Length: 527
Image 1 (cartoon, rainbow, N blue to C red):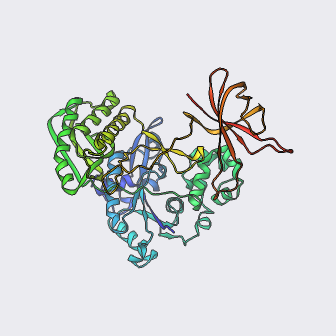
Image 2: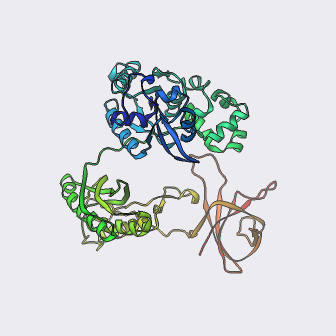
Image 3: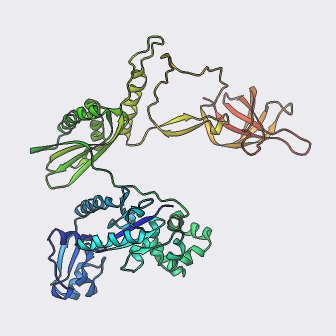
């Protein structure tokens, strides 16, 4: 069972400023003026973080700065919010926390972005057990003047709720399987739900997580949607919540600075090609190719623009990567927002794949393998950059049941399989029965069916409020369910063409008996 540590960093923006020596350290809250961090919000500047002195004076995050100054006076030290610097400092702290476990995930927007999770499954015994691990982590954070609250539980949601809303300044360790009792008395706002939903639950009398867990689920889903039940189930361990670990620093990357900032698309693409040409020899030496990349553009004013690129197969071609970035920049257009230009361009390889040895041509078949896969891969990558959406393909599955015979999956290159003699390894294929171009996701019932023979094709039926008179029919093709599934009625499929020329794929489920008539369904349409 996974064991997750949640580390909530109290007033993280002020902690970062203090560690950067922007906010002076004082021995006690009484010896200094209150310090707050403010950002633009509804109605003007609002407080986003407060130190101990400001908290003692009654200042709280979310309060308008003007109201705080009117109540306390002009002696408040106000620091501008810098979310990017906070995120960068948190990333560095997460890298430090890898001394405990390789799986460290920073908080996301739902948690407020001021902490991180540690997945300690199978690692706590290296530190003398869970209690010793939590004590060591708390002591190290305290020694570095980083105030934090810690909790360990079976799920990230439960650990976060106890660390952020539990109220205990000492590390909390929940025994395995003890999520529900530990959360029962916490406020529903600890479930990472929207404040409006939490307020509505309070008005209904559901102030605690225990009361919410005991309430009927169907009315809650109808009134508040699926998100509320998802958050509740994640906290109680009924649904999984995988952690997205902090990415490793890029092992393959290169950067280039400019005395005169650049902003033209042609120059940016040429720079990306040059950087890839620097990286490619190092990748080739290790036997890998680039499969995902990130192009970071740093503006003169310090703002960073990042473009992520995913490829269908590993490559070392700088020209191909340049063309794809060119397509991405075409789609962005003015949204790139170069302002006064970019002074630094960096290209990092964020994902790699092993380069496969390919045979350029097959003498016996005349099949050019590179032409078979490379052109399709380039087309898929270009479409992904041009339209801004992932490319999917219909992939066949090993099932003779029509609705289970294929599935949609992300496009990826499929190489030709060769046997020991170098020939294309293809299974012998017999004549395939006709299959419709459009397969309905769910079969639709046909009504008022008339057939001349009990087991023959239909002569007339009504479907989608339209009467279809059949001029020609082919079949039947009998398809039965797999023996390892629950028993299901046998289907007899027919390809029918009505008097208007529309061709449909229909089937009869079961057989006619003296008590019941067989049912008919439409499952597909031919071109």
